[in-house]
Length: 315
Ligand SMILES: Cc1cc2nc3c(=O)[nH]c(=O)nc-3n(C[C@H](O)[C@H](O)[C@H](O)COP(=O)(O)OP(=O)(O)OC[C@H]3O[C@@H](n4cnc5c(N)ncnc54)[C@H](O)[C@@H]3O)c2cc1C
Image (cartoon, rainbow, N blue to C red; front, side, top):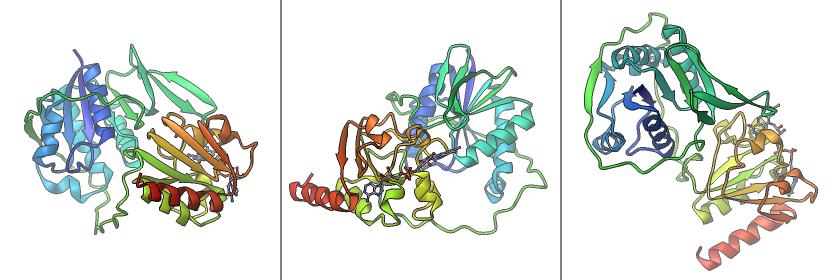
């Protein structure tokens, strides 16, 4: 049985959906051990334990938290050696991909990023060349490092919560590691995380800089606000809101696409949504090819009406 090391960065109060997906995938591949670079609370650790994890690795000092990714890569390399893991699973954030790359160099191990599928023999599926090609590839080194896109694998229900054992590991920080000199809390929007949200209202170039009506609808539905790359590139909304091939992959129950044409790179990040509603003033827009419901109209007329009706009905 292979040992699978799952790296969980920035633990919250409880396991996030994307973390449950990683643990579920890990459990389907072998015995799971977990590496946590930061301190986690008991509820989080119980969640980790419920996936059959017997032990989790932690740096034996706070030094890793004082530097950028290089410290986490050094810690993870130590965890791979100690656990004897042959598969390492990480999330797919920019930070996770950088850690994976540094880990690959440290261990002389192959890395595959943006994984959306995995078949027997550890053959990974990913999109390449702006979504034009779907590639099947496999790592040929002893250790395989995979960064996995959220919403690509099912998060199966975990078993009974149990407490895994903490294993502290000494970590030698590289002298070149960049030190963190200060931290500032990101202001909370009160809206759910994009990759966790059940409802997403996403806007594109058609919103012309005004996300107000989309925020109103998202708040009426308890949803998150996302965007196409055209909207994030224009600086109308932060880059972390970008959905698509080079942004986040989402799979909500309801995806409302507003003023987005539906380019292949945008579809790559949202086409697995359960129900897609598209609002676009151009009836020939390609977004209508994947929409379950389409509204041809001006978003600035359609959205306020929809929000008002939803509020009236108390949905
Ligand atoms: C390597 C690469 C990676 C990429 N990655 C991504 C990615 O991750 N995510 C992503 O989204 N894109 C990505 N792109 C860009 C992608 O190709 C498209 O350019 C982009 O998605 C277009 O954004 P848009 O649909 O908002 O804009 P447009 O294509 O300009 O569409 C705007 C739409 O708004 C409609 N509209 C205008 N005014 C209104 C109105 N008042 N009411 C209703 N509808 C209106 C128009 O009819 C039009 O259909 C990538 C491109 C490349 C080359």
